[in-house]
Length: 129
Image (cartoon, rainbow, N blue to C red):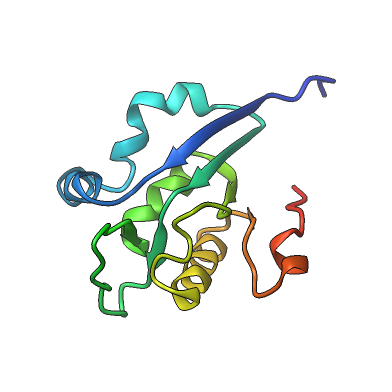
């Protein structure tokens, strides 16, 4: 076992608009193919800069459309993300329900998340991996 730990950290991960159109054509791993090697690490961390909605829920309409379908986000786990931050200015664009769906999405693909919750204590809880 090595004493070294490698961390890959990225900024905004935005899976909406034209990215979703390309995912429909090429599959959910498509956005991460160009950076797959750079993400190889002991822990990959990123900021999920959009809300998520379950496939069985009608897609909300919003002027910014910064929202992803759970199916489109499947590539996040395939890319190796180990923690996602939901603490950003778009998590509540569609209301608290969609913030909760975004956290549930992360749970469904096995990615711990931070930066969101029904109260400050929950929103500030750490992800321990």
